[in-house]
Image (cartoon, rainbow, N blue to C red; front, top):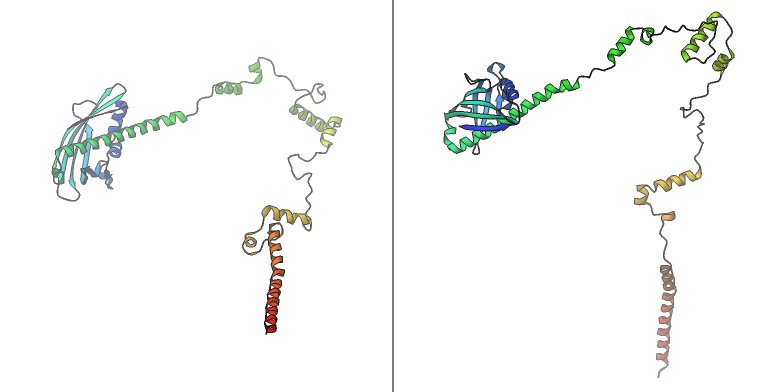
Length: 318
């Protein structure tokens, strides 16, 4: 059996992945590793699917560099027995990595044999299933290799770059201010001779402390500064607000609340509509009822009068 697959990954990265049996075990599709750690990472159960059938083999694989094949050649051997049955299978495979433009060509060549359920499969069917298994293994191998490369580049990207001004700041801390500027340091004004120019906040505070220590009277500017009343903060929303809670809500408040909220579900379901929601009867219905109220007695009276007149006329006839 011979099979080749091209992958866009350097041969050196694939070589490192194939050199680690634990990482190779994660690339073998359908492999369930044994719980016993002493058995090795490539020992366990392997499910082989072909022509709608699944055959589970229990055994181990061995991966090592090929003798005399160079660093890009690996030898894979395996042997296993059926988990349900008496059949067995053997595998001898050679994997060769060839550097090409834009990636690497992985060439598989070897033989496989056995007895049991695998013998019942056609040769073409078994060969197609083996090639699909190698394609899936190659895909997982590329994924594992790229994951390692991305993980290796992540710490380098997360390392903070060195600040260009760090050395300058360190030098500034070691040397004094006079050494950096090339001038002699300026002497601070004495407490007895106040500065005539406006100074910074640090100088004014130090001057005020010197005056207090010497026992001299404070200047008018300082008195007006510290004795001035401090207004409340403008960020306090309750500084100028007075909260008054009325004893009873105004009458229009209930009406407005009822207008905004509307009637409750209980009122809609059970109570007849009132107020502006009450239906207005049409004038035609009232007029018809009033006419019928007077027409019925009049008709009854006319019929009764006709009956009485008819009887009287019958009696007068001879």
